[in-house]
Each structure stands twice: as C-alpha cells, then as structure tokens.
Length: 312
Image 1: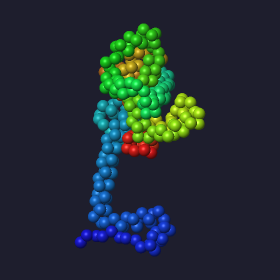
Image 2: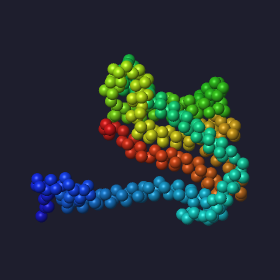
Image 3: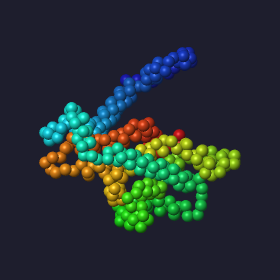
Image 4: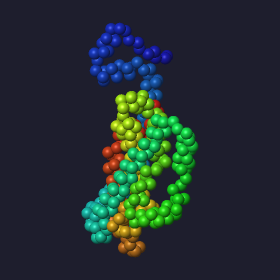
C-alpha cells in the first residue's frame, strides 16, 4: 500500500509559521513518503562513506610523512608506522647541522610564490575582462591563440626561455620566475569562464554613466566581485609556484637564492649515512606552508569550482 503525502490545512499552516526551524524541518520530513526517505538515507550514507574513504586516501600520505619526520632512520628502515615517535627534535637538530639556509630558502619561496600569484591574478582577470566587456576586431583569433597556448607543454620552450633569460641578463635572479606569471593562459581561461557565468554588464554600464574610467571601474567595481575565483586561483597559483622545481633549478645558481624545494637536493649523502628522518622532516616543512594557505582559503573552493553552474 502506497503512502500518500500529508497535506496541511490553513490552521496547520498558521501553526507552522510559529514553529522553530528544527520543528519545521521535522514536519517537512514527515510529508516525504517512507520509500523516498529510506532511499535518500541510503544514498546519503554511501556518499559519506565514499567521502571518508577519499579523505583517508588523501590524508594518509601526509600523516605518514609527518610520522617519518618524528622517527629515527633505523625505525624508518624497519617499515611503515602510523604512530609518531619521539625523534622530532633530534631530526630537526640533524637538519640544522646540514648548515642549509632554511629560513632564507623559505622566504625566497614565499617571495616568488606570492609575487607571481599576485601578478597572475590581476593581469589574468584584466585580460579575461576584456573578452566579456568589449567587442573588437580579432577577438576570437586572440582567444584561439590563448587556447592553443594552454595545450603547449611548457617543457618545449625551456631551452628558448633559458637563452632569452641569459641574453637579457636575468640569469640567477628571481625575475624570470615572477614576470612570466603575467601571461598565464590557464588563469585567463579560468577567469573567462567565471565572467561568462557571473559578469554583470549593467553594473559596469552604471559605473560608466557615473563618469568612472575603465581602469577605475575594473579595480573598484569588477575586481572585488571576483573573490571566490581569486581565492581558488590563488591556491592553485601558490601551490604551483611553490612546487616549481625545474624552473629555479635551471635559472638559479646561487645557494642563498635557492627556493625551499631545491634544498632537498642538498640533503643527499652517501648510501650508508643518509638521515631519512631529517629528509622526511625537510619534505614535511616544504609542504607545510601549502597546508596553511589551503586552510585559509578553503572556504572559497566550493564556490570557485562551481564556476559555470549559474549566477551567484
């Protein structure tokens, strides 16, 4: 026998308005047929189980790395463990004994990552804005070039880029690692998709009527509305720049200018005296700032990845 949904009378509607939110939710739940409620509960349970399993898969390597950073080399050689040990301070002291410029490398990575990301965010949004706010001859051709550049691997241009950097006298400086972020086709595509879903041309036209210049309109009216997309792209930009190993390895020669990931190559010792605990701690310290950045901007990710789903 099929269960019929419950209807409410006018008196019940008036009583319904005086109920709390929890009571309203409970009454609304009772109006759903039992079969649908059971099906919804099963689906929800399966989704939660899958999410927990995926979270374990993602977090387990980080936890194992932290555990190895607290263990001695002999313990690491004995096998995997999920329980932290007591050698964290010892491994840190061993890392200090390498006499590596850890703090300098950290600030080098911070400077390069945040400068390149800031340039990428501003100029990429400015470029993407030009494709939705204006109509000009050759616009489709320019957009096609940007799409083509996205599909070309960066490794193909490394030799030419290296020669250009040397000819410009920028070798062993940070500029070749920062300036190219101005012309990032991937970021332009990202913001173009966001503008297509959320751009309000009426707001821009109202600013123009009020006498605002084009740059002032973009900086004060358009740019602040891009917070979800900016935060999402900032995470990707900082992570990509921080993890960049080939670029600094090819363009930086001075040890005092090394980035944090580049220090890993200086931790190599002979096969019989490798301090695995210190190496695990160094790798963990390398990814720790990325976890902090992610924690600060994670609330924007769900809003950012939903680009194209509709207007906010």
